[in-house]
Image (cartoon, rainbow, N blue to C red; front, top):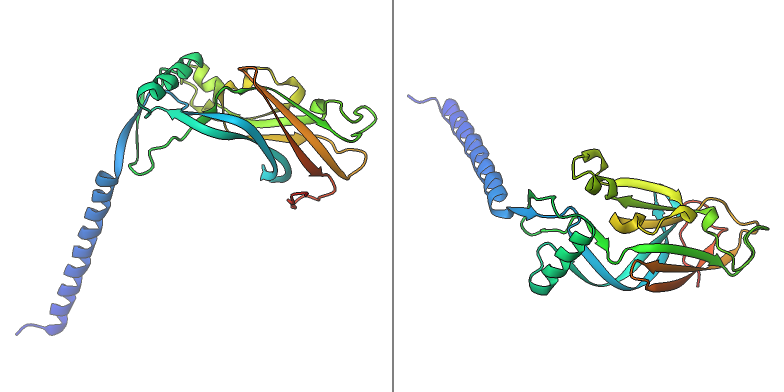
Length: 239
């Protein structure tokens, strides 16, 4: 006579094993059906064209005193573009010397990228002035670049190394704004932040005028009211 308890245990074991097999098949099936190999010819996968700039105070590197400098994007070209757009992407990659990455990467089929994108043409110069006296050395209208830093992520050294220095893929760069050279942002990917290295003599609201000139000699200007009295941890747009 069959032991009912033993029979039930065996059924439970079979159920657990069956569930495990089904789970494995689902995972394997998901990996096969929803992931795909993509050939990536250049490390910078897309370039964004823009017709202006914008700025806002934002959280970055644990500080809320950063100014996030953004481009107003109008269109893009990338490694999966076709026709004239693909020709344009290839041309920009040649200009930047980024043509031999040539790697195959497995990615979710629904999220093809791009993973690394840059503005084109890149920013060549950035200048910041205020409508008020900053300190005795910086009266209203005088460049504040020497009391500011720029922070960005660069793929410059990685690309120029021939893609051999894996630890340089995306370097976080911070340097004085007045020392920015015209070609340094050529390989800038991700966000660009401007940071005041010192505060003005009077902690009140300054109307900052930020002017960007890119590598094509196109200039864009934006104004922003920056409230220097706001403590760390506070972000508030001034009307």
